[in-house]
Length: 309
Image (cartoon, rainbow, N blue to C red; front, top):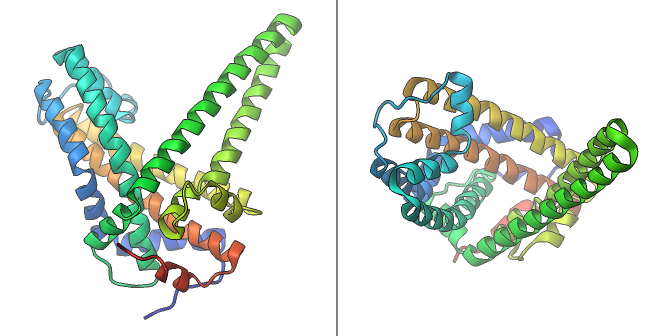
């Protein structure tokens, strides 16, 4: 069996490795995510059918660009459809159940790809069942830590916008429109920079939970990204751009050909699976690279210590 590479990778090598693993394991990874996401998708499709949506073709009210924008937030689109056709009671039911399903399913789906990719990095044979089982073995730490991260991020954004509004308002009142506008831009950039910094520094918490059995994993993430902030941030930007491009093309074509129909939604969800697959493979490759750089561990021994329950 080929040993895991323990030498730190360059920016380009991480991207190349991400594409290579995604390509070689595309089928099994895609099916793994499809299995996990199936309950959420079926629930959505059920409410869409009850709302009277067409199966093959539904007018989207616009062309390619508008179709892309309408499909970027499919959950909100479905909620609006349910509210319009089924009433407020069914909308609340849809919102409650879909939120609970999403809170459970998304962390498990992402963790499954991480577990599978860790095995692919060693050229080990893996199965969909092993990947899903490995994710569920860390179920509560994943759910709890992800929820905590969401709360922290939400509170930080709220406080940031509040301070932005107060400081911007004071600047406008004291210095006039011109200076106030410039100061608002500066405050906005500083706020964005602060959010980007903390999100990047805490981003590795998910991998730490899966492999190192810690929770919530924030301190471990901070340690892993020490001295590698710009490297990590830059890779996330590249992954994000690639994901947006893939999503825009696939969802745009779906919207153009099928509008807002049920089949169009199915194709949009399949596109979402592909982008999730790519992002999480890249995340895993990056995680182990940071682990190598900052802790100089033998990655094969580290992953072998991860015991599936």
